[in-house]
Each structure stands twice: as C-alpha cells, then as structure tokens.
Amino acid sequence: MKRLFNISIIGLAAALAAGCVVTSVYPFYTAKDVVFDGALIGVWAEAGSTNAASENWFFEKSGTNAYKLTVNEKDKHTAYDAHLFKLKGKLFLDAFPQERTGDFVPPHYLLKVTRVEPQFEYALMNYEWLGKLLDKDPKAVRHVVVPDASGDASKARIVLTADTAELQKFILKHENVEGVFDELKAMKKQ
Image (cartoon, rainbow, N blue to C red; front, top):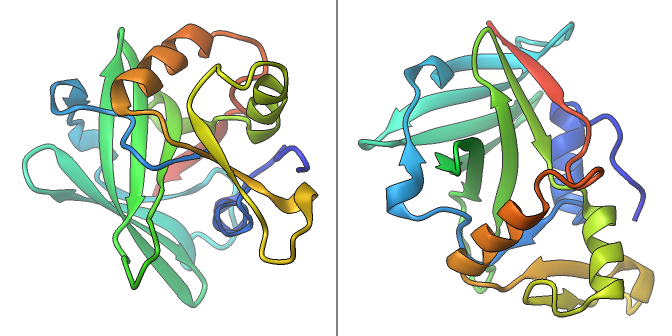
C-alpha cells in the first residue's frame, strides 16, 4: 500500500474506501475513556481549502458524550458515530460508520488528536507502518488479513481483531514510535 502523505477530506474518504486506513472490529475506547469537548462541535474544513462549503466535516453532539460526524464531499455525505477519548492523557477519536447494511461489518477508525482549538489537528495511524510491524511480528496485535476480491495478495487488507483492552495497550506501547502516525492534518472551524 502506498503511504498516505497528504489526506484531504476527499482523500480521507478515498483512503477509507481503498482500505489504506487502519481499521478495527472493536472500538478503541471504553466508556471510562470518553471525554467531551464542545469546541469540536461545528463545521470544519481543511486549512486553506477553497471548497469548504462542499467539502467539510460536521460534528454534532449525539447523546451525552458522543458526536455525530458527517463527512461531506461534494455530493456524498457519510455519517459516523464518533467518540473523543483519552488514553494516559493523550487524545484520540474513534469513528464508526452509521450506515450498517446486510452482512457488512462496519469498522472503527482511529485518529490521534493533538489539538481541538484553534484548529482541529489529527493524524491517522500509518497503515504501511502497521503492515511492516505485523510482517516482522505477527503477534504484535491480533488481526486478520482480508483478501481482495480479485485475489491479488498486494491488495489484501489488515483488520485489527484485538479487543479494546489489547488495542489500547498496543496504541500506548507504540504511539510515540516514529512513523506510527501519518503527518498531522489541520482543519479550521468555519
């Protein structure tokens, strides 16, 4: 998989669809880890974007400590249940697609959040880094490799199957390792 260097709003959706983003069957948080920051509520667009009106992220409060995140890309709108959470004082966001049809198993996505104000800054876990780690140490974290429909092994996708406790232990063990997260992306409130 090619490393994702610069993910814009459209790029994030494309990366999710292409399977180049680290996904998990289980959430990355527990109820005790969840935090709520009202500053996240609103419309956010990539810093410097000229398409902020049609390409943005919209965070709404959902329940007591959760968000509904809608990723808007021109004519496509994808909704997620999102939870901001802390592990050892570090902030993360778990996003889970609201659309659940048929036998599709919706994945959890992990974003490391470094700032909410004045910009929303986040980074995705580096898929290529994870693949290399699992090639060297397949027992680093429980996972499955999902083959591509074409049978092309180079297009197979890694899906984490570890439970939440194991995922959190894995994140905390590696979160300061160089290259574990992609470059920071910045979004400005509109």
